[in-house]
Image (cartoon, rainbow, N blue to C red; front, side):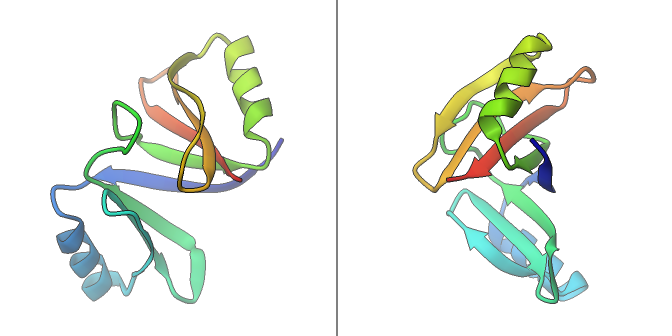
Length: 116
């Protein structure tokens, strides 16, 4: 298993305001918008990405960071073996990801996912 991408997730009161602010100040453009989450990226470097969330569609909280891996099942197995607190079970989401949430030792909520 290897990490493919790490994306900060910031809570937002207004996705439209976040989109406007980061577009005007840093030139970031929307690359994904599900209504409750919007991802903004540099058009020349799409890996330079940040996400803003008003809520999460299926999980009870907004994560602090999303980590995309090539094998989310292996990551989940490793988390369980390590005794990590699983906050959202391994789930196939309708928007094309398989993911779970865990809490790290400092209390941060981590979404670990793979695109399906």
